Image (cartoon, rainbow, N blue to C red):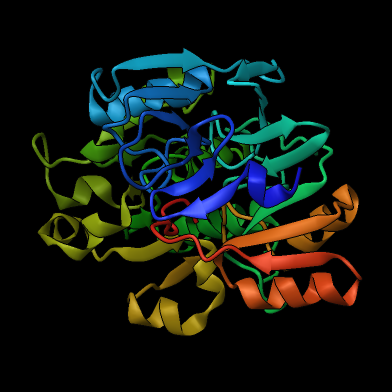
Length: 336
């Protein structure tokens, strides 16, 4: 069997013809296998959805309990046969519940990694290398210029700034699923035990992480109902990046604008967003982690999707590994 006979890109997403299912479809389909809960990978409207229990729970929180007609829980490593094709889910390390999906038939194994991360994250399951003949990798930060610094050093920079400017609130833009909880948990692990104020958009997801055993400490709503601006002096306030572009952000005293993202490596992006304290904190692999993962797996072929595809394809070719871009559309950087 050729790889294209087992998985191929289509306008609806990555499709498995013999199994008659899609992985992270961008349009509603009969059967969808979903890698993780970010909106560019997990969409409502599919008839049947298979994903990890945590991803299914996250989809229900975001879209309502009726996001699909039926759900099937995929336990880690459990092999399930769909129309003669064997599939299994393995930790991707991107956000809580995120998975790589291995698709296998007639001795050919293809791993669709979705979005993945290799470095330590106290709020997500650790990435598991999965042997395969074909590895499908994202390429969000697939340029040599992207080398993420130590994540804990970035969190310590934030804590140091709160001490340097005790009269100012620190507004941290962080995506609602994964990044926000990671920032909060890492602040706690670095000894920051003051209340952390959160935008209302984070409330349900933070409560879900707490219910899953990930302790986030004293979280309070970022409202002015019981006081004034001075109440937030020296405080850390976490919210989705979009919240800091509207009047909600103007309620805080002389705020220090922060943004937790791998894109903060690009100074022009930080300036364009008006970010005073850029925090280079990504839920994706950097260049070294992408290339080291491919070298570790040593697949016969690599398919590259959603990102800077050309550089990674060229790197593979230089090490005598077949590679090609998939040019899948509809995927963004929600969890960067």
